[in-house]
Image (cartoon, rainbow, N blue to C red; front, side, top):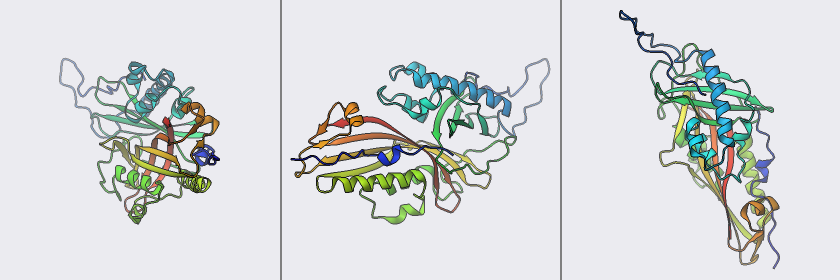
Length: 334
């Protein structure tokens, strides 16, 4: 029995070129120690001056690059400078090359886009770097005064995308809680986006009201899915399903100048291909075969992906995804 076509599951995505430290987070003391009471620090404005934020970000990205280069089992090195979505990527098996780590091997000088408003903790820094023609967004966090800033997320921007205006650096930027002033909260928007890219396609059209799928990544995924289904024909079945990466649907969102938000979060995606009775066996492309340790499958091929997103969520219109990183983290072939 002849095998089914061996089109790579995400060939439509691989072709896209995505474009567009160790300082502690202590900041400044609330009171100056001396013989007399000092004036209480002004609580308005940015929590970290721009020059300081640049230094913090430069050192944090350099250390993050070294952490990504460490083995997946080196959790001590990872946890010293990475947290949240970035930590999950660093923990992936060594055989899967991570895009984030590659971008931080020689980090460029960052541009600071936003810093947390006020003098309380946690504190956040939103920065961007340009690496080999690709614009990257980075979020650093410091949870308490004695804790160094860590890289929470790093994601490449999509071709032709941009970040809307943020509040002035001198005033600082607030984080958005839930769906405050937005069409929906970040987890709901990412959930809708994932459903719209699922195969089989969802019958419920309500998701399209929350987020668009005309960005380069979405159009690429949908085209690749269509091509895969067509290539398999009656010889196999293909499904693609998105779900939140964590039970709490971890996310972070910065308030933009117009009241909308720039949000970050992760999802997991599972691609599943199975031969039908007419095929008996599906041969794998050489790259997948090398990672899977099998040249063909008779039962199924399962690919597990970790997806990281940057999304602009308006007050009353559909959101737009402006940054995506997709990372293969497991292959099961049998």
